[in-house]
Image (cartoon, rainbow, N blue to C red; front, side):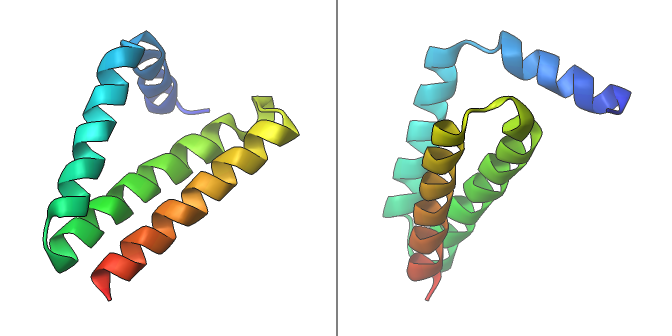
Length: 85
C-alpha cells in the first residue's frame, strides 16, 4: 500500500461516525432532490466513493458484509442512472 493511501485510511478511521453518517445523509438527500443530471452526478460520485471504500476493505470483510455492500452499491448505481436518464 502506498503511503498516501495509508494516510487516507488513518484519517477515515479517525472520523466521527455520526458526522460521516449525517454528511452522507445530507449528500443523498440533496442528490435525490436535485434536478436530473446534477442529482445523478452526486449519486454517482457517492457510488464511486463507496466502491473505492469497498475495494480497500474487501480483504477484511466477511462474505455477508461483502454481499450487503455490493447490494447497496448496485442500488445506489441504479438510482443514479435512473435519475440521469
